[in-house]
Image (cartoon, rainbow, N blue to C red; front, side, top):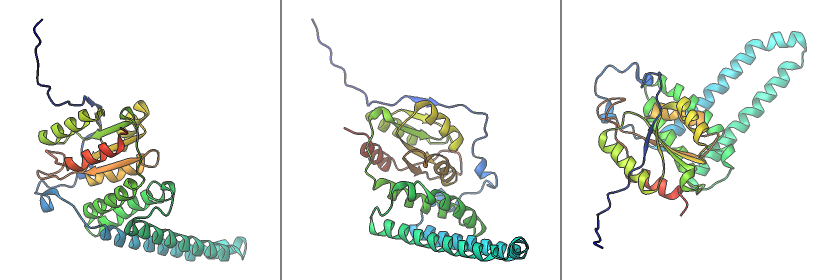
Length: 271
């Protein structure tokens, strides 16, 4: 019998598309068609997020204090002690909020896990990141602050050193990847036998997760979609979020760090 040998081609993951009527890229409705700053690279140091987060906490506290000041006379008409109780509650909440923020800073910069994930990156942090994004918009720094916030989230999540089985990890990507980036993702996913789904934002991610029931996710998106996606999904299961570069504007030929993706997938898939 004659034996034939064939050189094996690199494994590629199956690409599963989730179709939807939702218009792609609505987060970029205000884009004027001009090149994005830095060729669509919004990399920023973590300190930028922490500075805007501190402003956000201070603004929320001031807003709550102003509202209480305005409503205090009406509360006093019901019972004279209500305003005092509410001021004490606001003071306690403010103190706890700043204490938590201090623990967050220490956890990140000291490389320590000072709180369970439900009280840190997969809990209050997701809400802080979302609200901080709105504050950053007022200063024209939305994308950079969101990128920094996502980097902080990923750093905290990576330190949990989780592992899952090959069939328990999911890769979610958008439809706007360049051919080079898409080929790279499929090659990496095929190498570790991980399925790849095309889906955008939290709504579709929740649908995929509900149907596939993974134990962990590696998601790819721009900063704007990633922030909302993490808010919707990361509180329910572990997620690492890989942001993209947009050299040709939003929703077209996006690039990503394939080395980082492979590192994440490899570290998460149990051998």
